Image (tube, rainbow, N blue to C red; front, top):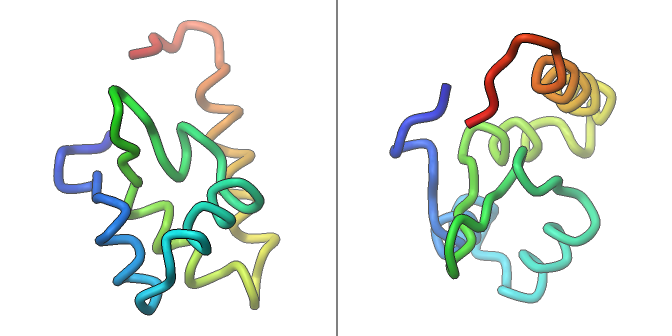
Length: 86
């Protein structure tokens, strides 16, 4: 379960990923990341889920399969019967 310290701003993600531009962040969101797994947009401002961004950052070039497995496990757990969605 996530807590409030797991959610970070776009500016924090950009710094975490080596001071990437807003355009690059937007491209990553469009091409590499899943809403609800890597980021969420609860109101107007997008919030990023730090543990998932860090996992992606550590694996996307060298071990994409590990990150894909993590996503699949998360999606499977989310869709299991009897699980309450928040």
